[in-house]
Length: 113
Length: 114
Picture (cartoon, rainbow over the protein chains, first blue to last red):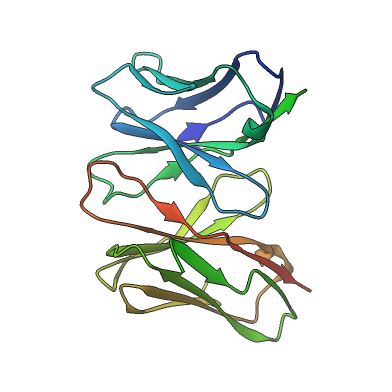
């Protein structure tokens, strides 16, 4: 049973508009969440993270929102740029997991010019 | 070299072959990981090494055999693989303990088993 779910396999957004990628989790013990971005033929690269003591973290065009009661987080990218086209993975961890990450299946984001 | 490197980048092998994947990290980290990524599936953690000691083996078949000779190098030895083992194999490293949980990935080895 997947503990981290990204229910949208793909998402298409117009350049300049907002991209919203969603992630749901089932384990209430998760206390840290990360978003990674992956281009073809490259490994995932860290994008942004959030601790469970916060409900928002912002870094430039990227903002992550955490709703603990709904066990839901989202990544907002605004404005979306062509270089944002990639697969985005959500990952989660808890203090008891020996720093191991539990991953979602990814959402492929396509930015249309 | 910087970051995490993996060789080879692509590998095609028959089911009776023996091959090895290599990973090297240049970040001074003390933990290294092997992941399997199949299409449209979450990254599956295979093995974890902390301070060169294997701390996790997520029910991986014995046809996959990891080796960590030091904190900078990690190998995955492959023998008698099955076609369903075809996937992208990713190596990652991190510093533990660390409040960020962040892992740094190599580019992966695309493995095809024929």
